[in-house]
Amino acid sequence: MRYQFFGLIASLFLLLSGVAESQQAISFSNELLQGLQSYELQLEEFESEFGPLSENLLEPLGSIAALLETQGDYEGLMEIQNRQLALMRINLGLEHPDLVPLVRLMIENQKRLGNWEAITDQLELIRSLQLAIYGSHSDEFFAAIEGQAFWYLTLLNIDMRSRPGRNFMRARDLYKELEDLAEDRYGEDSPELFPWYYKRANNLAQLVALLNSDDRLTGSVLDEVVRADGVMKLEQFTPPYLTSAWGVTNRLPLVAKDRLIGEAYLRDGLRRINKIRDIAEETGDKEALAMANLYHGDFRILMNQGGSRSYRRAYEQFLEIGVDTERIEALLNQPIAIPLPTFFDRFADLEAYHEANRSNGTTVEDLLYVGDFTAWDEDAKSIAKPQSKDPLLHVELPYYQADLKFRLSTRGKTSSIDVLHSEPDERGVERRAYRALRDIFFRPSIVEGKVTRIRDLQIRYYYFERNN
Image 1 (cartoon, helix red, strand yellow):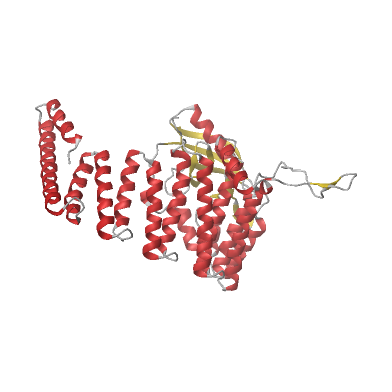
Image 2 (spheres, helix red, strand yellow):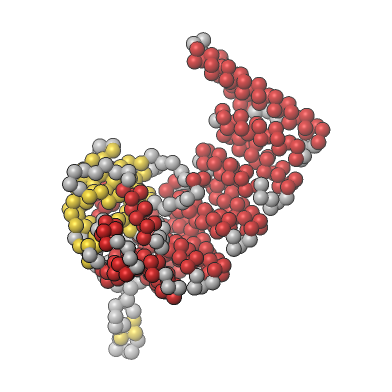
């Protein structure tokens, strides 16, 4: 097997100068070239002795892969990894556990090359492997499906050549599949369902936010929603229905000023929060019940209906279970962007999340820093970027940022927005951050169980702007 890389190294030698740094580079490149040549000779010997499909070829192929990665020859590395995968499947079987680490390495390399479609295929392979190896009720299989869902959401802002609406709906279907699998795995009255119900609810909230965005993503998502679900959940009807002179009842679609397109999806999300509340109450978990009431208030805020009653109930329940009043006030007095990415069923976990969210900011004097907000996309500038615990699926992007000052109403809406600073210091960055903050929802300040207006707040806003 021969690599164009060898010729590239030889050409590079002719360009290097005689200074010390260049000599070191030549020495390193010589060693690398010699190593590659040595492993290639070994590979040829093994092919001759054992045949081109022998498991013995995996060792020299692994060594070649490591050297190519060191040099940054990612195209060459991709070829080697494809051959490794083929040999492992032939010799170890199509469903061997050792295939998973290799596929993950392949995904890491495809990220470097920007081969997004290949990553989609490789995540599907991981899913099928985890199902075959561990079964449909395993943590490994659940993680594989969730990785797929997160990747489809990531494609919305890194691959505009694909259909973003279709990618979102694929993610939605996967979260629904996870919910169904979780109910089958744990039963329908288990606290183990909490995270899966909330992931589903959060994804539905993302859908409604996309449908009500004023950017380019809205049309694509709307088309796919209509194709998948029809228009019933997108329409709002005037009550009572109108009756004509001929006795025919007509429903007139109406989007009121304070209503949202697709609000029915938010109600679906709220029903999942209610399921969490019911399970927590049935199992006697008063702390989880109080936490669920906080999230119930959040979804009421997202629906423009106000969450004061739910927040009050949560506050009282925290007192009942013995949470210190100072801790409650310290946590709930400070607003935070919603919906939160995770369901926390323990007060201390929510405290830790608040603290981590506020740890990166530099607070301006006399302002209350409420954390940072990373936008999903320039066409979803008021929607938080989806999060994953798997670093393999993270794609590093260059972000602009702006620090903003604002006020917050009892219904979680911002006003009196002022841009304090932006990087880069450009009018376009300031304008985009300003417009985004107008549409971001917040859990309002809760003082002694009552929602309260608050001023002099500060947030750091990040967004990625595509060049295309």
